[in-house]
Image (tube, rainbow, N blue to C red; front, side):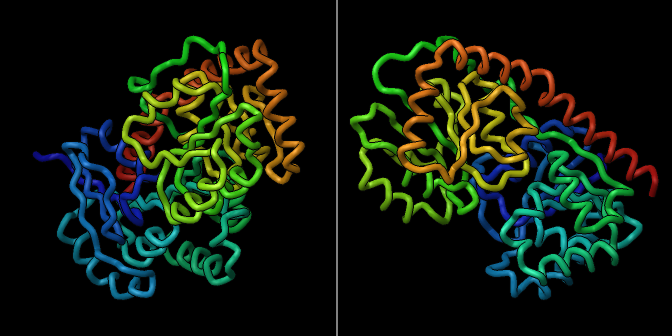
Length: 356
């Protein structure tokens, strides 16, 4: 008897946190065959796991979504999945109005609906509520804060919901052993170049070159062109593009900085925690939940002078930086392991499949 199939639906395979997390998970769940259905064609991953196939519905914009419903239903009938797992907003709406009730449906919520830009639109919130009433799905949230916000939007979702923290591949991470710094203090920031990451504000705040602080930003996204223009006038800031070996890049830096305004649970921060780089983070609830007291926090709306003082204080406290970096590494190893995540997800899949 062949392996059973699980169908996963996500917007695209662009290199974001949700997409990276999905493919890393499928590689571990070898007892199933996996079909990843994307709404759009984008695929930034050169190699997919051997037990995984990618099918794109070829959507160019969300106005085409109603037209995809019949094609998606045909695909489900053809693949005969024992479970469907949706990620992100529009794929979840499509799944809830398309997947038959005899097939278990699981949904991962990756970001806080209380602060996400799309959820400020009334029709987005109404569609989510309507689709959940039509076809409830088992909810996985990437953090306690994300789950709390989603339950506030849809109280009924609390009946079938739990938190599973994300992970990064521990085997790839290279630990930073020496935290001593000489010369210029080098910060790194990684992630998709999107509005919620606040990289524009970070560049605006960054001190002039003579102050001794450098910032390298790794990633790609819709703000790439505008950020490159901003960085062109700031010699201490460089956009380094998207790389496949970030685990080799991170140990080259003295500190990790993020000014994100909205995060569900950050894979980029997890990579930095696992590497052992001292963390300087915008003071938002998701970072507090993820890192606790193992990071130094600042407010992204600080003045330029106040931001320089924050950087100077961070640089001067070498012993404290080293202590907090080690505590972040310990927290990473204890709470955010691959085994814990995979076992929790495997239990949900087994329970949902057996219940149907």
